[in-house]
Image: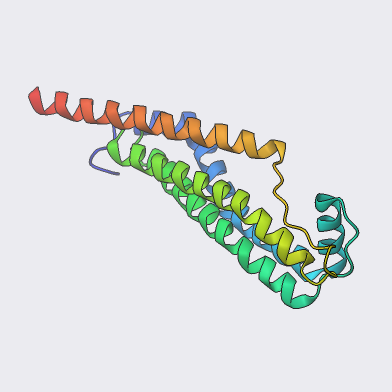
Length: 185
């Protein structure tokens, strides 16, 4: 048991243990699931061609393998940031299980989680024009596209992660005040 853990740790674990364990599992499963989906998507020429034809509202001919590999590599950047956010989610809920709930460490971990998540969404948004250009560069001149598209879940992701960042700041200030108060008493 952690030295900073409260005396009521068993009560805390009985109340939120199942939730913490579930979220820890999800934090490990999600990046694995997304990597598999990305690998399957980018390895399937028909899927990539159909998806980018839909998003660009154009008729693309089959996207060649080197361009699909390039698309996969571009998407590995937001994937890596998403994985870092998931790692911090795992660390956050592992800390909760150990009784480190309203601590400076928990607040900083929550802040890292939200910053990695926000960076992943931002890079994903910025990479879309590059991906659209890359997926249509094999087309004849006049049939190539450079497009930016925004999807409804992008705004939800930004609002949710921005809220987590604000919550992390509130927790950080509260933890610092608690430490100051403990030092005085």
